[in-house]
Amino acid sequence: MYKKKPFPWHYFVKTVRARIVLVILATLLTYVVCNTYQENQFQKVLLVLLFLIIVSIIQGYFRIIPFRNILARVESVQVQLPHNKKLNLIYQKDEWIIIQEMLKLTERYIHEQQELIEAQEQRSHTVLESISDPIILVDSFLNCKHYNKIFKKKFIQNKKTKVFADEKLWKVFEDDKILDLFQWTKEKKESAKMAGYQIGEEYFDIAITPIIDSHDQNLGMLGIFHNVTESKLTEKMRVDFVANVSHEIRTPLTSIKGFAQLLLAQKDLCPAPLVLPLERINSNTERLKDLFDNLLKLSVIESRYGIDIEEINLSKILKTVKANLMAKYHLKNVQMTIPDEILIKGDHKLLEHVFTNLFDNSIKYNDKATTLIEISNKNDGKYNSIVIQDNGPGINSKDIERIFERFYRVQGVSNKAIEGTGLGLSIVKHIINKHQGEISVASDVGKGSTFTIKLPV
Image (cartoon, rainbow, N blue to C red):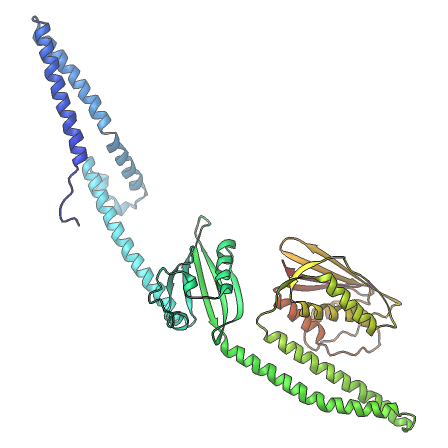
């Protein structure tokens, strides 16, 4: 409430000025008429009076135009009000009282809205504080607006700046990758995630969500930092355990294989019944070694939160994989078609492992005279699709649903047993998932299989 009521000096001066001008004009006209026309002065004065009344009416009409605009806006607001809110306005005749009542309603509405905003802020504050993960809300200019106590404890308590309200986000995080993640969310208006990112001595899964209004304008971003330090350490322990077990087991396996090969080298001196068991010991130790190698690879891939993304020429990787497999399967006739250039973004070593597994399966399971493998690429602006098609025996429909499961093995349509650990395609799927991509397979028995890998552009 105002302590002193304001006075409308501007409107008062204009009104008084108009009245003074009208009085002066009436006096001058009366004087001129009286001096000019000595006869019938009364009639002439009446004409002057009538003229001045008409001028006053016209002047008054133009003076109330702003008042009419105000009443029109009051009427438009009144129509939107519920019936119980406008009872004091319906039967009023005086326009000034209508405006006064509307101002009272507006004042009451503003007060209610202030209480509602305060209640919402209190609820939002309660919700933020009840979440155990650090949370921060920034505006579209990356100014810090709100954050909970756990966020302050994790990221602000050691900072030199004492108050972080409306401070820039870069004063909290000096790491460009986190700032770039917020900036990307702001520009693309899409959610963004970063898994297992190390901040200090802890690891966090970071999720940034844009706040979009009804007009598709970005009002800000909400950042959630989920602490995964414990699970990260658990994963590291699991990987270390698998690595240690794998190392400890491979040592005696290597000895067993070495002695078996030594005996096989002298198989002419060995009794005939012992040759076959020695060959099986040799092959099975090799299978066990491959099994532990694949288990270690799978464990490492699963535990990796980040991968080294870079732009690579996939055609060079495919040619390297082809050369390696040609040396392994030198007795087979393999024809592979590779495009001259396929530019993608991904982890060089992991993708090389993916295509080594896929090509190895295409050659290993193919019992035809010539193995044909054709690689093609298509870019739709969102995904790079790499299609690998072969002329192998194909995969049964019941097997397609399970081929990416661990230890699940497909023997093909032939009766010939093919050695393997059943982990190759599982590793492939995990690597593609790490790239935020997809892998699918289509196959016709007897005609071949087609694997399609989609990697984000």
